[in-house]
Amino acid sequence: MKKITIAVATHKKYQMPKDNIYLPIEGGAVLKKNHLDYIADDSGDNISEKNKNYSELTALYWLWKNNDSEYKGLAHYRRHFSDKKVSIFSTGNFDNILDRTVLEEHLEKFDIILPKLRHYYIETIESHYKHTHFEKDLLATEEIIKKLYPDYLDFYNSALKRKYAHMFNMFIMQDKYFNNYGEWLFSIRVESLYVLQKVLLIYQILHFYKIFHYVSYFFCHFF
Image 1 (cartoon, helix red, strand yellow):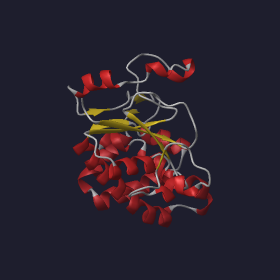
Image 2: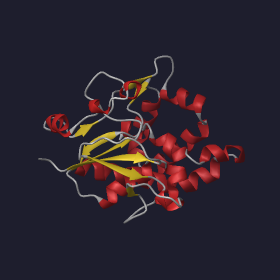
Image 3: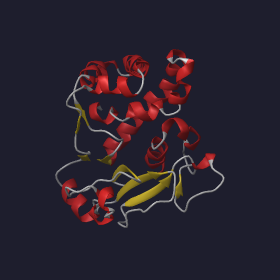
Image 4: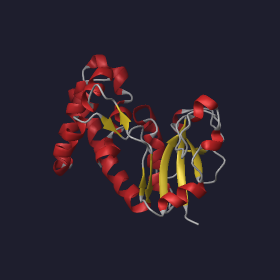
């Protein structure tokens, strides 16, 4: 039996999968007076205080730094992996969520499990982001990647021109890949705080709260 932990990031009490591969983690616990009956992301090595900016990424960071499972993953209280063609939340059927038995079968063949590609059809990832957020976010991210990981720059730009991506900060990875992704992602996040504070306009301050969360949605697609 493989040692598997999939963090379920949440900020409130919610129905959770019953399979023991799932670990509910309360995001932004350090910022709250009343806590949930879940693992809190303010224990151990953590960045819980950054939850307003990072959203579910504080749960991801906690799992990266405080868990030694062979396989690690991230899901959300309202978003889960399923091996069936069914909308879990339109039916309220949590029995369709991916379980250990099916997942271990997949992990015999694959080291990384991702959500289905999300297709936008009429626009690119770049144009979609510009329509729903701010172009300056992408320009700042490009500046960061150019500085820290120049070898990624061409692929970053080409990925933005595509009309599909693996979204929502959801994945299951063998530990070595998970650790590499954590190191890569959070090195960009640390640098981004400095860069974004320089380039974003004052009127974007409310959007700025979750910018790291928004941009990271498509990072796993080109890691």
